[in-house]
Image 1 (spheres, one colour):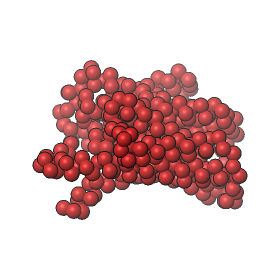
Image 2 (tube, one colour; image 1 turned 30 degrees about the vertical axis):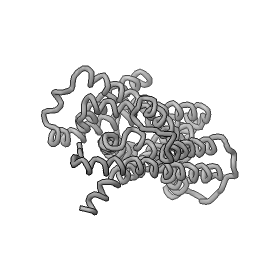
Image 3 (cartoon, one colour; image 1 turned 120 degrees about the vertical axis):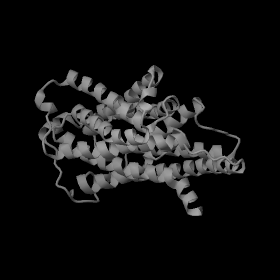
Image 4 (cartoon, helix red, strand yellow; image 1 turned 90 degrees about the horizontal axis):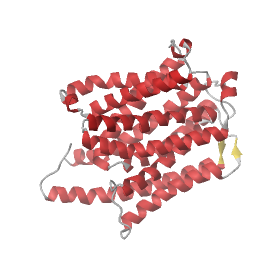
Length: 345
């Protein structure tokens, strides 16, 4: 019982770390295929569609008959969730095409502090500034912000640590013409990450109205697919843009649909119901470490002193926040056990 109780306590953290490894791999693949000329809306439309299809068997098996409980109020929340969690964050991949994975991933650290502020404002996250735990949580969140500011604004020495890239990555001329609009890319990265921060709060509210993680994932993916398809067709109506071939683009769509859409949103929905909307967002900092290393080794981008300093500060902030969060969860669990009623949705 001790082992299963310990595993249950750490399972949300394990899931979130897994998701950040999925995100890092997805960013590497997306950067390669977008620089190779793949239309971002094509990638996301097929990714969301395949993600929905993959979750349907789980929804039918574990939540059979629950789809009929989807009413207008729940659909409005699902539409909003798809808009702020799928469609607007799609701008992130355009920003990624304009910059690099090692640079773009750092903006994920806007998500925790924005999600934390929103959760506190909407009373989804407890905050007691008179307690040590509350103060430490705030310090941890501010550390993440400080790390992001250092990475974004501080111009440190560039470290040429790797002579080349392992996979022989070279962006095409078309991609080079499209990319490297650094200011535009930065703006899109900020907007998409702020939208994703809002999504965590929206997701928590949506799961209260429609508390079925599999069907809510299916519905949100389908709505996000439709929204992205409409935007994509408005931007580019050439049939060749929407045709899939047996190449790296197809591999990227399948990988991101399975691990970075279907698995991701089911796991996040599960964690949000247990730890609140701020908890998953704090793990965005972990993907910074994974992505920076992969970006250095696989794509051959340079590493800078600012990236190292920023990462260390971000990871320290994450540790402080999670420590504070765990101190909040443990007393609640003990109190619930004392009352003889442990609820597990």
